[in-house]
Structure formats: C-alpha cells, structure tokens
Image (cartoon, rainbow, N blue to C red; front, side, top):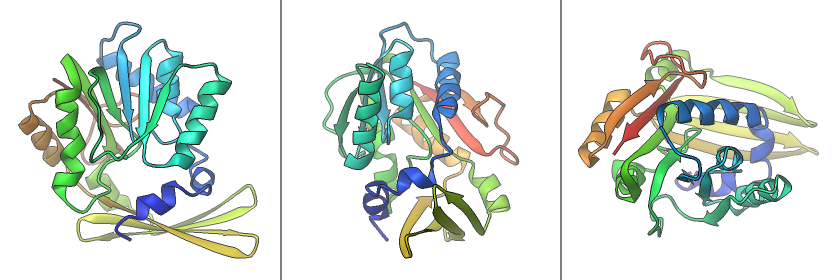
Length: 244
C-alpha cells in the first residue's frame, strides 16, 4: 500500500468516486484564496498535485497565468481536455511532488484538496512546502488546503456507501497510528475493484511550525471553503494561507 496513490489516481474510477467535487467547489476555494492573496491579473500561479485541473483551470478562467502538475496521466488528460474545451491557456505537466524540476518563479502556489501527507516520512511530505518557498517571488503566497486532524479523529465515519452511474462504492475508514486509511471498493459489472488511500495526520501546529521553519509567515487560516474562521474542534478543513 506504500505507493497507493500511483494505482488509485491513475484509475478511471477515481473520478467516479469523487464526482461530487465539482466546479462550484473549485470556484469557492479559488475566490477564497484570492480574497487573501492580493494578486494582479496575469500573476503566475502553480497548482501542485492538480489532479483533474479543477482549480488550475478556474484560476486560468479568472485571468491568471497558470501551470499545474500531477503524477497521474489519467487526471492530467482530463485537465488538458477541460482546458481545451474552455479555450484556456493553462499549462499542465507530469511530475512527482517530491522532486519537481522547476526553475520558474510564481506569485501563488497552491496545494489543494488534501494533496498532502501521502508519503511515509515527514521529510517527503514537507519537501514541496520547503521547495515552494524558493519558487515564490518576493511576498508570494503558498496555500495548503488540508483536513483538520482533530475533527477527523472525533468524527471519522467508519463506513459509507453510495451509487454513482451504476457503480456501487463502499468506503471503509480507520485511523492506524498517525495515519487515516481508507479502503475503497468499487463494484461494477460483477467485478470488485479495490483501492486504498493513506494520509499522514498532522495538527495545525505541526504544519504551521514546519512552514515557519522554512521562512513562511501565516497570513490567514480558514476552516471551510466559504471562509469561516478555523476552529480546531469543529472545522472540517485546515486552509492555511502562508506568505513568503
């Protein structure tokens, strides 16, 4: 299960499981980020681990110069096709977040929809946060949209089921050590396709202190996509806007 993200994110079934994440969600989060990151039109934005490009393409639609990268060619193909359909100039490329060969500088770097904490070591998990500091222009912004560890531990749903386009999806969740592990079973056409997710749980203080050690300062912390204040005991999300 160590490299679970390679199998899961390259599967066509991933988009079926997360089909409830739509452009409206992306619009809310992008506008929330821009309410704290004061950017001029045409500013350069990098969407790290961009997936199917919902946020990258939304930023592009709002008039920014956007690039996005992901390890999954399946999701990148979806991102590119959407950009073509909407006649957007978003640039996409394939890359591993632990080792991104970038020389460009950016005004805003975003790491959204819990695209963080996948790896075994803290060094791997925070390597891109550290790299982001060097990739940002002076007074640039880095935004990490992550789960709220304390709320997740209190309210973990052990099992849920749903049906999407004729596919029955059963998700089982547990906390094992300092990770939240999800088993995803997708039943379709009398076949069961099994996948896993495993995300390292970090508290707000752990993330903030680590980012500060790289040189970042905290600009703002939100607890949801509508801009609610972060409450460690009740917020579902931990959306931190850092500034260089």
